[in-house]
Length: 361
Image (cartoon, rainbow, N blue to C red; front, side, top):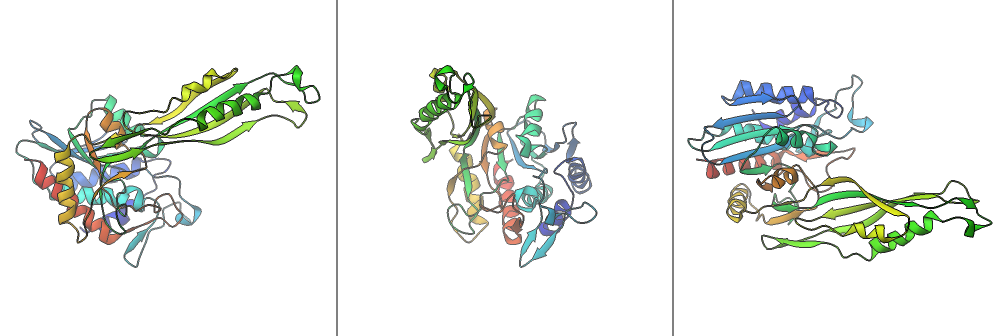
């Protein structure tokens, strides 16, 4: 089966509110086309295994859920619109990341059953909701030694080149909460202005240094920014509460000391989301995947750093050495005209096949 045809079948299945139909398609296809042990678990994850599992384990990792589609991406019957034009497949989830899932399925099908190691295919549910499927699988005992995660890595070192990401940033979203005391605006000294307290805390954030670290010779530099502020109830009332949203892009092993904002009177700080970063700790594995990527294309791929959090962060936190290799290019995912290159899907299939052949025994 050609990767473009399998991608189109996957993309056509709605999976932004309920991933069960897409997961069942993946599980059924693997049962029909491989002799692997296939599980479609209660969380919606699909896990297929080949090999004895006595040695190392290598996983090809993806997810089959998507973000809500644009209205132009849905047909009259509620299905997703899928089109192929000029060597690209258009539709919600084509780039993020059903195209790479299809490439991994075909690579898993083509791979020989390892004699000593274990080859795993896994497509998680709920990645777009903070990695809930991956986290649930880990809680249930899912563990692998190495993973190639099929999120986008194309176009980072040069246009059209599929690179190997050896690290990615995480995201910690948090809220500064400033509380004061309401009063009439004509007598501001009678109250305590929560907006003033919040802006003092914002100044603390502005003064923080961005976290940074090194991964396999590459600098990974984070960032911290206040992105929203909300406070006040009326033009003539001293505000008693104000909140500010902070977006921090985290790096492996480092966090900005945002708790310093609580040194400001009346200010507290809470973490709303913390998606972990990823750093590959095995240079030999990263080099082996880069060799496969080099063999699969005419250009010269590189080890790169990816700015976006993925399920690789959750796996890495549990000890899995991960890299990210996938078809999506920057700016393709989550858009009204989301698309993926058929040529790059074919390339990713070759990369995954090459890694499986070279790394498992």
